[in-house]
Length: 326
Length: 134
Image 1 (cartoon, each protein chain N blue to C red):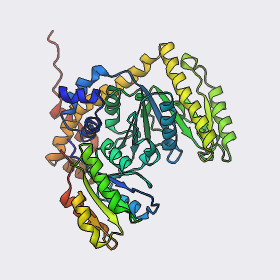
Image 2 (cartoon, each protein chain N blue to C red):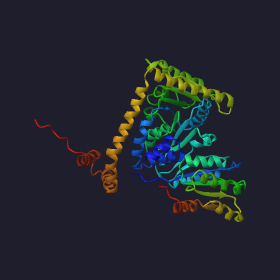
Image 3 (tube, rainbow over the protein chains, first blue to last red):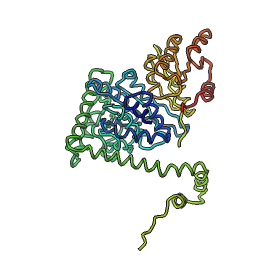
Image 4 (spheres, rainbow over the protein chains, first blue to last red):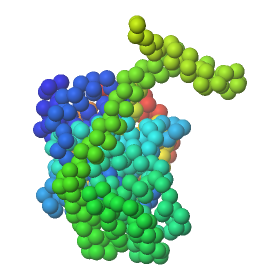
């Protein structure tokens, strides 16, 4: 184990990709590996990139990799795509946009499937970030699945969240709704050469104008990125985006706000770890004994209700609280 | 504990933009329950080998219709071996004359599928011959 974690810290690609695979497949030895790696993490700047399907997240990620490489920084990417709820399979297509970096030893790109996790991230992503961090990547970009309105888990993991929007996706009410628009540290209006970009810009700006205050005084900038076929202006816009993410990171450090972000990630990880340690063994047993199926059938037949049955399970597995003797 | 999911890469090496077949295969693999990484067209063998290792795939499926399979397919096998990943199974497809088969098998390609091969024949070959590496 020591040997393997050393390999990861030295940036051995096979060891890194294998460990991430083991995290995805939930192989029990991974807990040990993460425990060993944990002291070597916490150095990377973690950037989340989220937005609706087809908004251009992968293409922006590709150009961001290029911009960061120009600055001499190494980059790790985890790109998430959805798992089929029927076959369990997945098509992981984000990599198509990033293949020009495949031979660059300063870039590591890994595609992950959601495997049923909600929130646009797979469970392995949170831990995978630690692996890429321990392997020494300066910047880690997490690209979520194409999201709707509520998949905001990325803020639990990223220091800087980029929300990618495209014109023509809805009316002004969308811009004042809760959820994904609230988590942005930076807005990108992508495909801004299309009709409606100016209107979208004004809607976001109006929405930001109503905010009472911004933590650390960071008002999320709104960047317009036009067609990637205008290669020069596209590159320039994304270079500006890269610089803004670094500015944001610097601000978090200067204003002593990194603690908040780290605390959020720690909270999410603690919840996740407790769930894995407590809930999953119970579920596994209920599945393998066939009891879960029985309970589901009872529910279908309306012979019982979920709360009664869950309470029975809880009674069986949770030790009764000891009451203090007077 | 979840069971290991098969990870496969569908890759198109060389100067050939005909990726309808590759996309249909990717879809069939998804429906067979595999996680499929698709690289897109115009890939060099170096890009494919490097991506296969970063993605920790169990299988690489190569598709090329330009007639350059005799160079490109063995080169992918060679590079994987050079990077210590000879345990990744490599299969190929495309318009491949019978006389080239043996050469490609000798280079390390485990199976070849040519026009007329059904999607079922490909996924059942994979199910029988490839399992997630422990």
